[in-house]
Amino acid sequence: MKFKTHRFQSIDSTSKYALEQYEALENFAVICAGKQTAGKGRKGRVWVSTDTGNLYFSLLIKTPPVQTTEMSGIPQLMALAVHQTLLQTGVKNSWIKWPNDVFVDDRKICGILCESRFTGSKIAALVIGVGINVNASQKSLALIDTPATSMLNETLSDTPYDIDELLHFILNIFAESFEQWLQPAKKASFAREWRAASRLIGKVVKLIDADTEIIGTVRDFSVNGEIILQTDKGPQKFCYGDLSLQMI
Ligand code: BTN
Image (tube, rainbow, N blue to C red; front, side):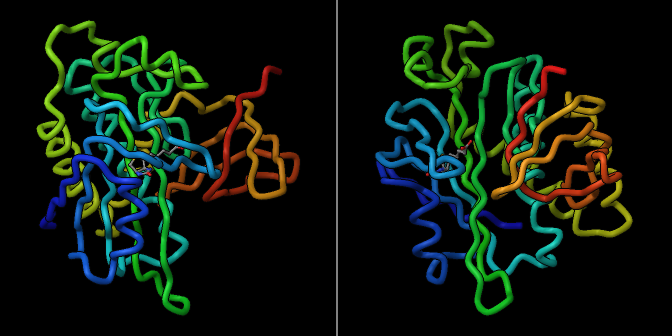
C-alpha cells in the first residue's frame, strides 16, 4: 500500500475534498490539513477543527476489494490503528467505542467518519476521515460540547507531538492490518483485537440505527466489524449505529 499525501494549510474539509476529487486522486491518497473551516462529524455534526496542532486527515481507498457487507471493518481497522498508536505514544487508557470512536476513559480523543461513493452497486470510493485531538489545550477542549481530551492533555508533556510523525505511525499500522485483514486466514484475529480494545463486552447498550432503537447486551464483534448484541429476539448483528450505555 503506497500512500500519496496531499497537504493543505487550511481547507473546508479533507473528506469533502477527497469525495469530490476521488476520480482524479490516486488510490490511497491521504488528504491532510493544518486546520479545517467546515470539519464534518458523524450524523451531520460539526468536528471542531479550527485549531492547528491537531490531526485532520482523510484516506481515500478506490474500489476497495471487499463486499459491501465487509465494508464497516475498514474504518474500524483505522480506529484500531489510532488506538494502538495512542498506547505506543504514551497515552494510557485508550479504548474503542464501537463503531469507531476512540476514547480515553470517558473523554473522546478521536472521531472517524466513513463515507462512500458508488457506481451502480459497486463501491467506487471509500473515504475514511480521521480527526485526532493531538496538541489541543484544555482551554480549546473546553469549547467542544461533549467531554473531550487530547494526547498532550493526557501526557501532560511540555513538548507538542509532531503531527507528521503521528500520521505516518498511524498509516503504517493501518496498512499492515488492512493487508492482513484481506487474507481470510488472518481475518479472524481482528474480532479478538476489537474485543480487547473495547470496554463494552457484557454491557447493556442502546443502539440507535436509522429510526430503530435496540437494547441489548454486547456479546462480541464479528470479523467484519459488526457488533453482536444479545437482544430479546436472540443474538443480532449490526454494522452501523450510535451506541449509548444503559444505566440498568
Ligand atoms: C465523528 O466523531 O463525528 C467523526 C469526526 C471525523 C472528523 C474528521 S477530521 C478529518 C475529516 N474531515 C472531516 O470533515 N471530517 C473528518
